[in-house]
Image 1 (cartoon, rainbow, N blue to C red):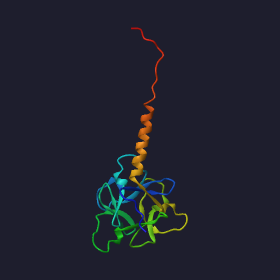
Image 2: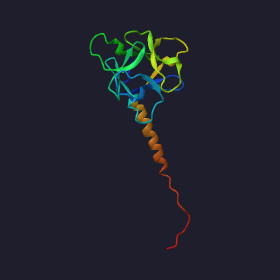
Image 3: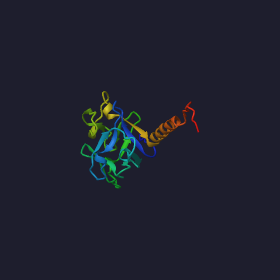
Length: 169
């Protein structure tokens, strides 16, 4: 059931806007809301997550994604039994849901396309549901793309232009 990548990854919506999970205002505090935001090119630690024994951990804060009623917030990890409200499963078809209830899935509130839209739990829909489907994008893919782009920029510097002008000495 849990098909999470190893290391750090982005949780990217399958909606056309392709926004990713983010911690509101880059907060380090417990109870900060999880929202969607356009993926950043740099300084994106608040958009990176890892999977550790069922917990989704934010790289910037070190806190885990947890439930507060149906809101998704960041919270300190519970290390006791009964912490299923902080543990997650991911299915290859794109649903991300708490171990406590597989019928509730991560959802972008109101199918909003606005940066900062709240992420919450909602009953799983089986059609017209892109706001409930997610892709896990390893950070390494992003780093490789940045290196490739950097190398392409460097290649442009290899072109030289010589003047035909003659200089008198």
